[in-house]
Length: 196
Image (cartoon, rainbow, N blue to C red; front, top):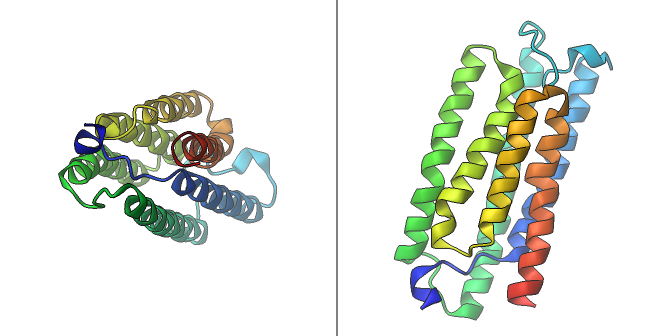
């Protein structure tokens, strides 16, 4: 019954790999920001509200960095999901998987548009919180089509994003924890509970 109503082929290894990739990517962006602003803590792009400090090179670096994180995270997720689906006998692209993707992508797409609007209005320090909150909402929205434990990860992302919105000096920490550490912990939990 669970197989017919829920997509259970998501692998814990997908979460672990996504977390490791995110930590590498966030660390690279943090390093680039420190280089860009010559170690002046008051000028950290994701820490301040002064909108005139971003430059095009750093923005381009962050854009490429984000796209690489997304590409590698999705590639590893697809690989491990296909491997697990072969073991469980569940189709990778059945109706449940399609519903899961739709419920995941609608809030993600909305969050992406919201981030673009903030870039347009030069509200750079709110981009990290927005990414975390909308990602959490996406996970929460799609949790009805997969394992219920996804809800815990969703709430964690929303809490981190909300914290980051009020305390922008924590943006890098929250990004690394939300997209990196939380995924690794969740992936390990999923792997040992459902796959080992």
